[in-house]
Length: 142
Image 1 (cartoon, rainbow, N blue to C red):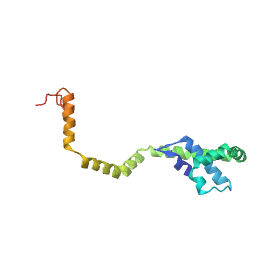
Image 2 (cartoon, rainbow, N blue to C red; image 1 turned 180 degrees about the vertical axis):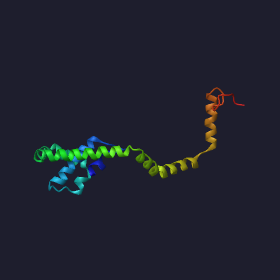
Image 3 (tube, rainbow, N blue to C red; image 1 turned 90 degrees about the vertical axis):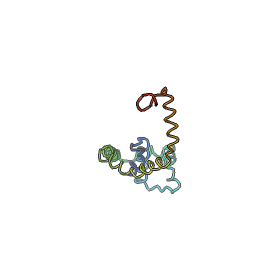
Image 4 (cartoon, one colour; image 1 turned 60 degrees about the vertical axis):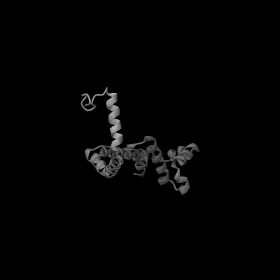
């Protein structure tokens, strides 16, 4: 679940991050190697270090292949179910409801900062650019 949480970006799973966090979490769970908080702060660097020094090659030779495949299949099954759930109508409505307060606040700020004089200038410019015709009806301005 941590792998899925860390690899989710804007509602979609980043496959590179999914694999990176899956492999790192296997190391965390299947070895007794202790990493400092400082080392775990930059997991991309930690992953790169483990990959480039040959650790991963040895680690994946030692891990049971069937167990690895089962864990990876479970990860993908949960990922697919999560993706389907997020795409459902209920999930979209839930997101709208969750985002409503922030969107309402943004709209309120726009309304507060609305200056009718600036709007009038925009309408005048559009009318002029439209050959003097009313931009709403295309009739000449009276």
